[in-house]
Image: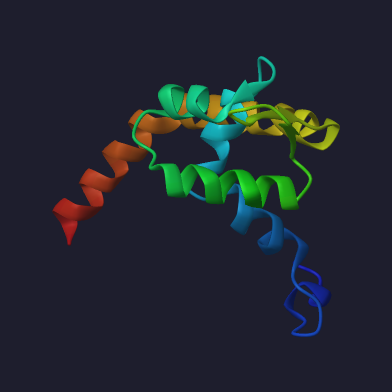
Length: 121
């Protein structure tokens, strides 16, 4: 049973609060893109592929705000900005990779179940 405090209107549910941020369409891809080390904005853009500049910028800001990503700006011309996973971001890779493995392992069964459901409806 889910504890009653998760339904409080005075405090946000910790599960929903975190999953709303990291469970969006782009955050996991950005975190995976930073797994191997520090990256610049355009490198992430190329690796992710179909994300817009505006959405990548917004996602990086949210991940920085939540403590998953560290942003460093260098006073150069043109300015150089680099993004790195924080310790919190690195710690999240462990359960995230488990979820990715689970999704990969079970995707075929999920697609088949969707097809059965659609056919029955």
